[in-house]
Image 1 (cartoon, rainbow, N blue to C red):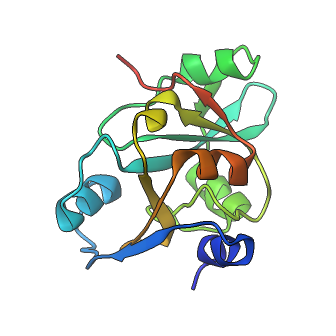
Image 2: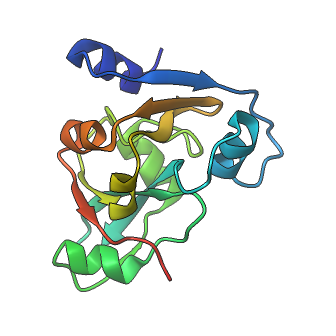
Image 3: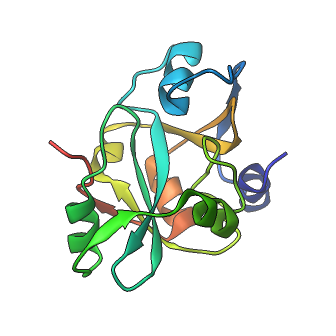
Length: 156
């Protein structure tokens, strides 16, 4: 299993696991999950690591169908600017490989924002920490487990 799944088991958080065959040639891991599992692209959420202008790394969780609005991330966290984190740094800090980064049970706890659209669903899908493995859980459980805040994260 993965650290994310272990966390859910140890806390007794209700969830379901969904597996699919990951294809190495997939352009978008999140959209691949949607296609393979027959899910809506606004209900499957990706995890992106962002670096604020002060060097702090933060987690942004948003629907796979949308682009991240970096200005919204910075504004929500009281920073002047935000950029996508270096891929190698993101993998090292989270302990997960890109395409399988889960917002749960990362090596280092980072401040986390979840797009407010998650509240529209009874459940959302996030990476379980490995390509081809998704966790379905209630958005408020995800919020609690990551000590996150809801924010408007999607670019219009």
